Amino acid sequence: MEVIAQALEFENRKLSLKSTNDRILASREVKSLILNLNEIYKVNKDQSIMDLMKRLTMIKRKVESRLKTKIII
Image (spheres, rainbow, N blue to C red):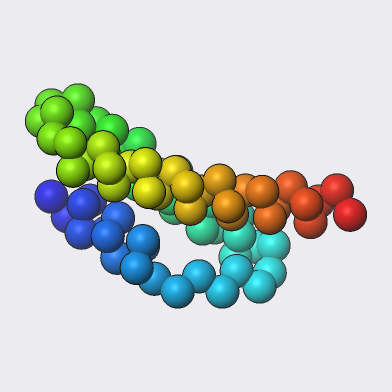
C-alpha cells in the first residue's frame, strides 16, 4: 500500500513546474502512479482508489496541457 501513500503525497505536493523538464518528470511520475493504482484497483475494487486515480488524472491532464502549449509556441 505504499503506492497509495506515494500517490497521496504527490497529490498534496506543491507543483511549481517551472521548466519543461519538471513538467515531463511530473507527467511520467503521475502516469506511473495511476498505472500502479489501477493494478491494485483491479484486485480490490475499492472506490477510494478509483477516486484517487481520478484526482491524479486531473493533475496529469493539467500538466500535459501545459506541456503541449509550451511545445507549440
